[in-house]
Image (cartoon, rainbow, N blue to C red; front, top):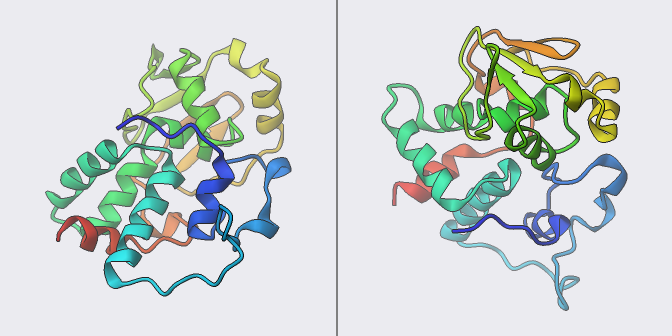
Length: 201
């Protein structure tokens, strides 16, 4: 299944939540509770249990900007863990390199972070890494090439000095992975158990 490249806010309005798909200047928060389409103002129908699980799964997929195939693969990996499947699933998603770049505040959106990685602007432990799905590990040193810091959007993001999650440490154009991200590090509203229930049907 190909990656969605259509209107970003349409996805946010489908689930009624801000998914951090666009920069702050482009958010349309006042429209989040209005579903996209001709009949968007009509009352939302109550979802069935399956519908609720599906919506939460879609929300997670849109939030991290991944495909169905990628999410299913990560779920299968999480389900093999001895720890809680839902928390492990979120931890694996957080450790994606594109998400790590976004969490570090080096890109305004995950899509921009993914592009940074794909265009060879990121190094892990001094070596080029251009795979957005790469899983960062504890003690990894993540760096941006100097050329990337001169890109206007990236420069602006870095100057904002975004508050970091506790599993990351940042110093200018370099950062270190201090530990595996925990469930408590993810502040966005997620009900990962519904995703687990969806895939374990």
